[in-house]
Length: 266
Image 1 (tube, rainbow, N blue to C red):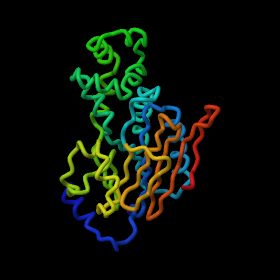
Image 2 (tube, rainbow, N blue to C red; image 1 turned 30 degrees about the vertical axis):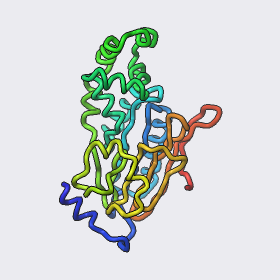
Image 3 (spheres, rainbow, N blue to C red; image 1 turned 135 degrees about the vertical axis):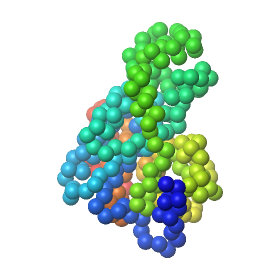
Image 4 (cartoon, one colour; image 1 turned 90 degrees about the vertical axis):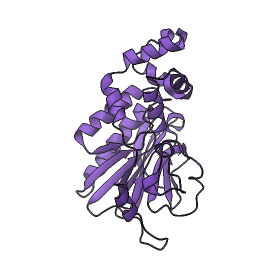
């Protein structure tokens, strides 16, 4: 696989515009973080957008961090799994999925997980809030183990680390620009910010990522960041790619709490 990536991405600055292969369409969605309401709206918008377009081989990519911080991580996981049963949906593992999975075995990681939005994830599985808040760390971990179904754990364990389609590479956080694509470390794919974000040169592929919140999609030429901070801004963004075109779909919560999804001009 990595040798193929090397060949695909061996391009210079003056190469053709980045493209998705003919006959294909890709939707990439940023970090959901437990916002089931926004996720539901954007799922419906993507399904409708794809149905209204010319027939294509369509792939949906969730860029990771489905869980934590928002109110309904359990619901997000259930919907992602159900969506995957009826269309081609590929899912990347984010740093929050990593923390969640590791917290089942490590008490110290469980402590770290709780500090970064994990409490909301555990509570979304129906754990009693008062009992959880008053439990010591080991008791709280035991509550999580009892509440989270084994099927959900297995589903999260099946998430991918990187996806290459055409001239694009999809990862959760980014890549280390000093390291060839085929030698990237999983830790960087899930956690990196610098030196990736400020790197001015080409990476070979255009890297599509989440992880770092931006007010609006950031198309920097060599990378496209689409984490618009759903859990705190009420905006969940998807990037639609077909041929050499790029466009965006958003699910946005208004001031009155209503959620709507629509194409956005950026």
